[in-house]
Image (cartoon, rainbow, N blue to C red):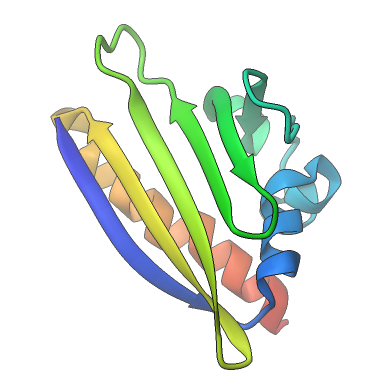
Length: 126
């Protein structure tokens, strides 16, 4: 299992990013795909029309999102923690993704960089 941690700078407020990551209609706007999401702990979520699935663990409004992502028959939980920190006129988004199966690691990192956060960044820039 591997871990991935990275900071992304997004030109939006923590409140705007939090809504974009937790509201299903906002998620669909910037991903272009169907999304199921709730800010209630212990609820299932689905992003990119089912490409990403898991369980919501905890939320701190405008500050933090914690989710478990599913990777098949994995025995250790793969946890995604996203923290939002106001920085200048934007937000520093701190991502920590733990227990990523080694065969999936490169694809997951590429997905975070080139799809997930690139699309979110573009949503606020365009």
